[in-house]
Length: 479
Image 1 (cartoon, rainbow, N blue to C red):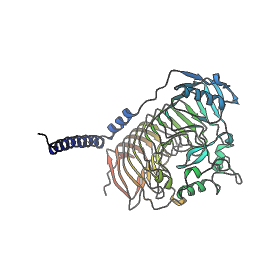
Image 2: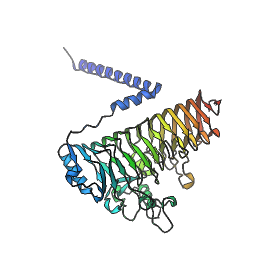
Image 3: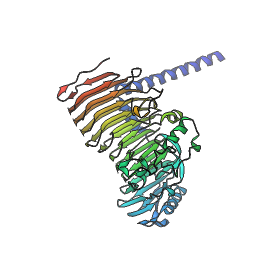
Image 4: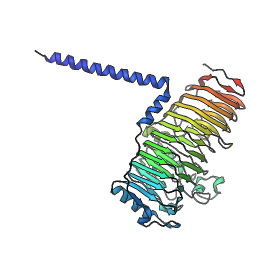
């Protein structure tokens, strides 16, 4: 006779066995990632789904588009995209020629494909860009639509070897930055006016709902170029992007995105090449960045807004890219309040007298957040201005960026790095006495020239393995 007690014991034994197997597997995976974190990167890559589209094609010319560079094609593109998604998706084809247009809003299952000689010219008339839920320097708001925008979409792409031209310059979008190098002069309104940028930051600190943070006309906060907001399974491939008003490619709260073979050539203010923010499972590969700001900047929200959203950016993979001009090659921060982890950078070339650093982490005690597990290997660095690695917790402190949210930076590994000229330092790092920068490893790093080996303040455990700077082997620092 089988009693309830026997049944209970058997069920308990089965669940116990399952638990042991689960713990064993978890321990095994953890052991693999700790022993060789690059295997974890391989698992992330294998797990990212690829976009797939119907073989139907919707030529924008069939919907009234005119490729003369003068006629507005906003409605023609909108009709083509809506027809495509209504019929189950496919390719929205942009043939060779120049197409003037306002913002493009993409839909699920749509591949916006540019032929090789196609160029989309985006209008510089701010009135053509409606207010949408977006983000500006790590703070959510209602502002001008990005030039290309998708929200809550799945299986979306921008492909082809054509050009996306934001047409920004010092007579339109860039002048709003308030920078004298971008056409601004005293008396011209800009984002720096008292009722603009600082008001947005204050709203976020006070917890004003995003729907009530209404900006747009008269507030001079420039729109981003390409923003995928809360999207999944996205591809951007082969296009060239020039003359951006603001941040160039901005995955926001998005997952499973591949940016492949893209060229960014834009030297305007805040022209970061790619800014994954609150985003996970992002691959950036085979791209060229020549920018007015950071080439790639991984972010996770600014101050109170970042802590409200509380989504870290993680599993960000950068492969086979070329960084030319920029404030940093691969950067984390400064909008980093929700944290960043599991960043993998490999097989990149960074070289320009106008590239300030190769790898850069920037945060402060207003941002807070934890940045950890940053893995870099196989870099060829020609010339950078300041250093190979910068890790700072005092970014812009003298600009009023001090607070009560002490950040953490730890576990940074650079391996097989060849550098001709590092500028001032091999490593420039500073933390807090209560929260030092921890665990920096340089393995098989050769820096031919640097003014100084390092400058370290409140830094704990710096390990040099087979590392040479200025022809001398560098000894580890344990403390």
